[in-house]
Image (cartoon, rainbow, N blue to C red; front, side, top):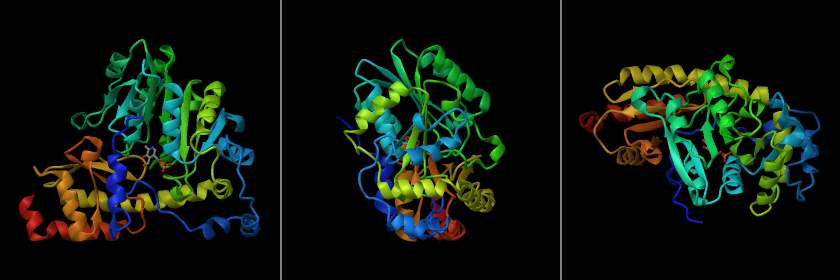
Length: 375
Ligand SMILES: Cc1ncc(COP(=O)(O)O)c(C=O)c1O
């Protein structure tokens, strides 16, 4: 398998565990295990007694039962648990595509959504959204990309890196188009349930189209990425079986302690959403005010979901070098848009409790003479 370096993860991996002020993270604030265990009486003892053997490849039935509840038309048998969304992306493309196939990927995107279909030998086209038209979705452009051998379409809403939701009518048209051409849709919904206005939540794709695979994860909206647990939901039982067959070559089954903790957390998932939404809605106005004070450096497209947003960086400088200097000199971590092939943008994250402090450090850095001069 030929695969290119995962630039987003390499950049984050290089700095995330050393930088003091994380201002670009895509996951909401996490919690300690003790907080999850305190959600139900007896959970602490039950966790200590939990069996650490293998679990079922599709995921423990009692876990799938809880996870299926976030969908309208899906039951536990139509959910396959995996070890993080990253594994699901790998499994989906490799279970589906062969070198004669074609895939379409909404971009800019989380990088593996684009590199993994290429790694199967299939040809891949980007359905690229552009900053100059407000990151709009051009459905006519998508339609023009479809070929007779198009097998897969990856979409992502709420979207990494813009934090924007797909408009509901576009979402439906995309699924209709896929149905018309018999295309499998991989709908990356890992930021779902963290819409800034919960009324704007889109339906899960798997509830609307039989060949859609909704990807969800505890990593982002719920703030539990250390559990490394995610799942795929779909009505297409036959394709889910193919995913399980391939999973026998990756992880076989998920982590037993993570399954326990996820089921427990998910029985109370609204608490996680409420808490994380409160953090996001407290942080966002600070970020909006910050960008209003720095229109000479940034142009901000206000996000309407998730924990992230993408700002245009106006100075004619290399954003990668600029972000490297920032983390080196001020300990503030931002993600340069070069890792998304968007060299004029920077990703900001506002899902962490200490975001106001990180933002203050960043602003102090911007005010320093050298930065002001170069801007
Ligand atoms: C859109 C998107 N999909 C998938 C993932 C992978 O998430 P996980 O931590 O569950 O592997 C990420 C992580 O940043 C993401 O942003």
